Length: 225
Image (cartoon, rainbow, N blue to C red; front, side, top):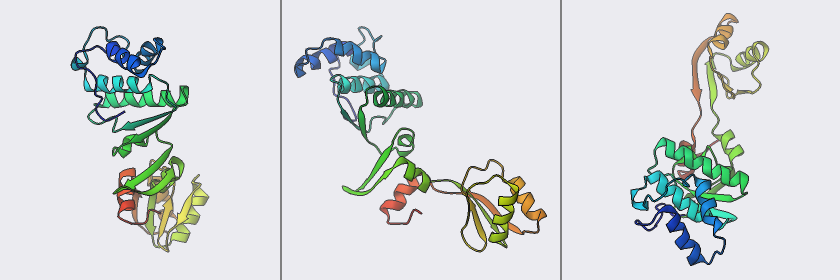
């Protein structure tokens, strides 16, 4: 499915799909209604394609793409220009296809934050060259957020945090810096415990990179952990 579906403006959703069903030689007349129901367009009636919203047009393009039950679906920038609700609806349809129809979905997109909610594998391409192929699990680890604590003694800080809190992943980055590699909603109790035990704390802040910054670092040849 290309970024902007090319369908007949003066035909309804059903008429458009019926045209392509006949053109493709698909003898299963029920595929049109099933595709419309799957993308939530079964109630559009006599409304013409030219009067559809952008989100409805994208969904009809998707219905056209899935009408023949493909094993692999390739989407080019499918959510460009959609409002938040349109993006949410489109994402739900994609996930439903993968889970219920076992369809492999390949999405080409520059909206990396949105992809992070559905992708299981990423391939980063720069200037036509594949620069990295990585699982969502490994990428999440590389883009993890962590609490950074800078003090006069990283070893002492690590020891106190392990003894007084339930942190499971504490890393000594250097002689002054400790990384708590997990979600910390409120660092104040940890800082209080450190100060009460004689540790001089100079900085406490959340660090890490998001998916977009990871990609920028990748194509610029920077290290990403």
